[in-house]
Length: 375
Image (cartoon, rainbow, N blue to C red; front, side, top):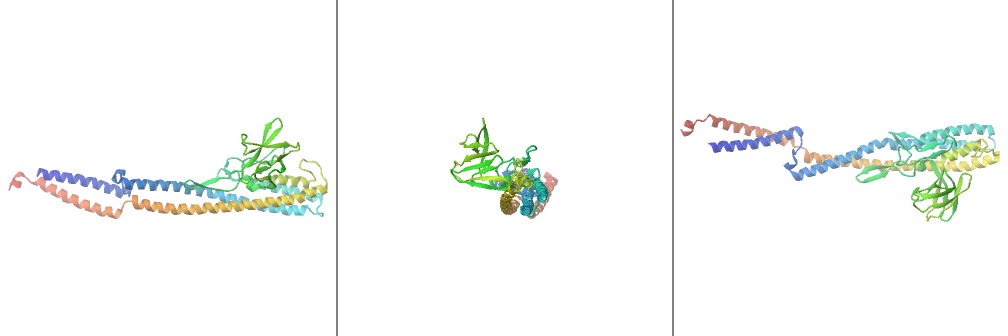
């Protein structure tokens, strides 16, 4: 009898342990309570959950970046409209029937348009400047309070976005892409003249930056790295510099639309860029060239806008892929980590019946006396 009680007690302890696991699984809806329950399955579940967390984070970042992409597109669309309006005003201004007084009025209109373009170029969304490349906390364009010249403060970098594990794609465009245009293409060994406010780029997008080496010596350094071999520069003393392309690549001299508009505004007031008086014929010559320049600036904005669109489309494609992966991963997690509630409910009922039978047996044994057992 004692051995029978020991066996019943042992079986009861096993039932208690299993009942605990069943009730825990029913309440948590998880297949495993501890990793030791099934170490191989547990490791796979942990791997699945790690992937889900990674892709969820990537998806969240892509969703947060939607306003950056849409705002970049909107800002460039508005910039193109303004630049197109400037083109129409230039056509009107550069005719023999337009008086000097009318040109003064047009200069005021273009100054207003320049201000609107500058505001768009410095658009900020969710604490990030749209046109500063990776330096999204740097205001891209700043106007000098003394000279009135507007300068780009960032570099030729491009903001990137994590769209897949260890995969990043470009997002938006920088200020050079959006508000500069090519003023000259310089072949190897050719000399060229440029201003301090212009940007000099190679075909790979690297920027040759003008560095004051001291003692009136200026040099161009690749990406501003003064440890690299420089391109010697001659200071012309009039705000321009001359150099010879000593690289093996064609260099592109990029001119800012804001500098181009300053030239237009000055010419409409019968002045050169330094404020000196000029004749109507000289002003007309400047305006004729400016029409060509603003056309180029408009084309550059179109290309930048198209680039933003294609990059946004690529991000959206990755977003769809990530959404699909998350759906599949969560389905697998549910399959492996989720408890089978139907099976657990059936097992719980079976355990209840077993408990009832065991306790009934124990009760009968407790009511048995030694006399009854012997009889």
